[in-house]
Length: 159
Image 1 (spheres, one colour):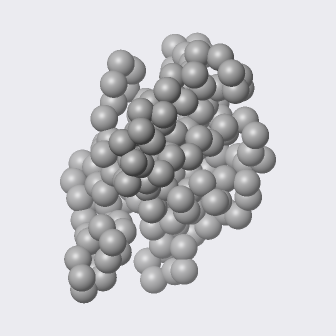
Image 2: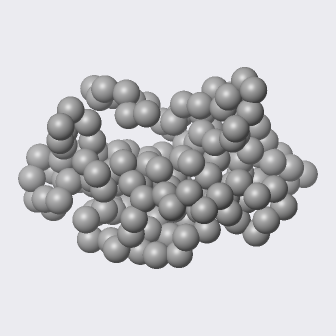
């Protein structure tokens, strides 16, 4: 099992980071491979709305096309079995860095459909042996990442 924790706090040793580290320690004690990402260490921006991720048949369809400091993290999330997101509350919501991360993580897999929210996603590892893209339902973080164990615990809705 591979678990990534994402720290949306500018502080690497305060409450949010401490809670994420403790969660990863628990997972590691059960044999999981873990990684802690500090968003404030990365040079990146939020979604640029270039729509390269929406172009059917394009090389970036379903994935963010922007290459910057966040690219390796986004690639790793495709291999992760679980994501743990941590952020302090600023102005009643997550930090700007966390929101920018979520934009880049989730926007590529959301589609403009009626009803809204059908998402094309992941190949063989999380789909079928035929490598066909799989679709999942309404626009919710836990459905946009169907291969991961997504549980929203003790937080207000992010999206």
